[in-house]
Image (cartoon, rainbow, N blue to C red; front, side):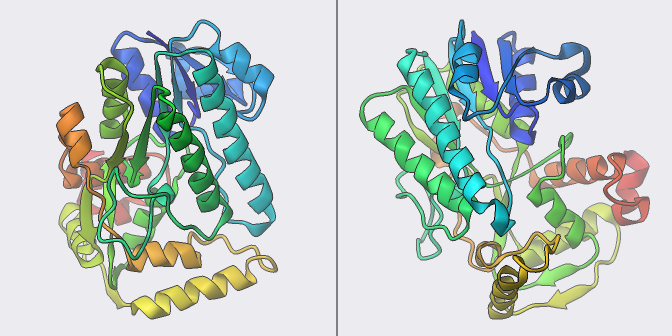
Length: 335
C-alpha cells in the first residue's frame, strides 16, 4: 500500500511513517522542508512532495498514485497573534487533505485529531460517541471545526477513520511537544493538584494507525487515551524511575485556572514562553478520562506500560539535550 502522510516531520507523523515503512508499505510525505525530512529520516527518507497542507495543487500532486492517507499535520501555537493563521491553516488543511482523499476514492483515510476535538469538562467520560467538544483557543476551535467536517463525510459513507490521541510521549520527538515540555517541568518539582493526565506512547499510536490501514473495518472513531495518572501518581512514578526526590508543590485547581487566565491576558503584550493557558489549566485540573476500549477491541491494541513510555521519554529528553543527567537521575546511566 502506498500511503501519503502529512505532518511526517512531526512526532506522530514520523513514528507512523516508521511503522509503515518497517511493515513493508510505501510512504510518501507532504512536507514544507525537504532538508528537515532528510535530516530526520536519513537514508530511509521516503519520497517527498514539497508543499503546505492548505495548498490544493501540492496536495493533488502528493496524492497521485497513493492508496491511503494519514493526515497528522497541524499548526500549533498558543500565541494570540497566530490565532487566525492557526485556525485557517488547520481547518483548510483538513478540508484540503481529507476532502481530496475522499474525492480521489482512496481506500483508507485516517484523520489524526486530538482529545481537544471532543473534550468537555462536564462529560463523565470521552469515547467514540462523544459529540464535538468546546474549545477556547484557536487550535482547539480548529480541531472542533475539522471534527465536524470529517464527521459529515463519515455520515455520507466516506472511508475515514478518526483517532483522538491523549498526551503523546515516547522517544525520538523531532521537536519538543507540549507533553514532553510538561514532563521536563515535573522533573523539577511535582505539582500536587486536582486532576491528572492520560499518556499514550507514540509507538502504540503508530501501531494503531497501521492496523486501521490494514484491517477491514467500517469507518470509525477511536479515542487513544492510554494510561491515566493523577498528578500525585505521576510525581511518584517519576521519583521511582529517576531515583530522585521531587519537591512537592501544593496547587489549588482554582488557583491554577486563575493563573491560566492571567497568562492569557498578558500574552498579547508580553510573549511569555510558558506552556500554560486557561484552557490548558482546565485540562490539567478537570481532566475527563478517555475510554479506549473500542481501539482495544477492534484493533487488538494493548497499551505498553506507562512506566516504559515515561522512562523512554526521559532518556530521549536527556539524549536530545533537553534535560541534564541530574534531572534524569538513574535513567541517565541507562541512556
